Image 1 (cartoon, rainbow, N blue to C red):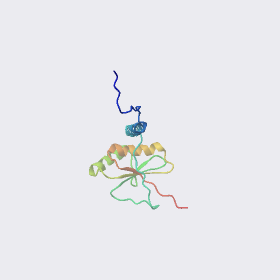
Image 2: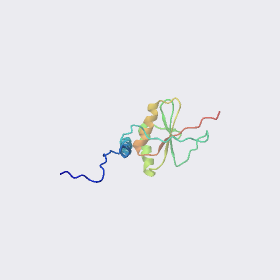
Image 3: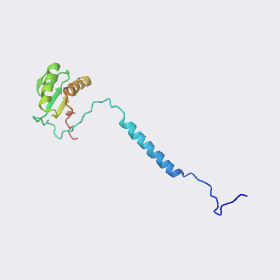
Image 4: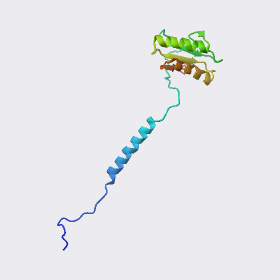
Length: 138
C-alpha cells in the first residue's frame, strides 16, 4: 500500500537569479586578478605639468637634459655616459629619494631619451619624471 502525503507535491525549481549573480561575481573577480598578473613592459614615469613657461629648478633635484644630437647634460654641463653613471651613483648614495627630471629637445630621438632614463634607473633612482612645459594658451 502506497501512502501519500497530505501536503500537495510541488514541482522543484532551479532558482536562476542567484546563480547569475554568483557567475557575474566570479567573472569580475577573475578579470581583476588577471589584470594584476600582467607584466608591464613600459618605463614607469610621472608626467608633471608645469604651470609656467620657465622651469623651476630646485637644488634638491637632479635635472638631465638630452639635446637633439643625443648628448646628455647634467644641469648645464655636458657629461659622457660612463661619467654620468658614476656621478648619478654618487648622488644616489647621498639621497636615494632625490627626484630626477629628464628634459628632452623636441627633435631628440626616442632611443636617446630612453637611454638617459635607463642610466638613471640603473643608478638606483626610482623617482624619475619627464619635465614638460605648458603650451601657451590660445
